Length: 134
Image (cartoon, rainbow, N blue to C red):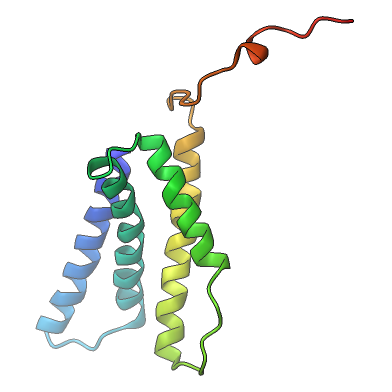
């Protein structure tokens, strides 16, 4: 879990640094580095929410990921349409944020289902014993 959070932070720092370097060199901002910076920042925000759940709220790591996954799903499916049309730039930013949320859902889902992830829910006695024929 900590590795995923650190990777997201590192990717955000790297993409932001690349964008700042382009601006400092006086280069024209291209769409790809700008998209990558926004995407990396949005992805980091999802993983930072997991970190907040764990560190500040004291929630178990797997449960924290599940909580943030619920929020990410709601973000992707529950947003209302904008009251007025946005610019092409607004659409690009929204696309990057949605792509980051989808990536978070995919990578956190893989993390939760990996064989190294310990079982977090207690197994009930009914499940432990095989069913007996009547």
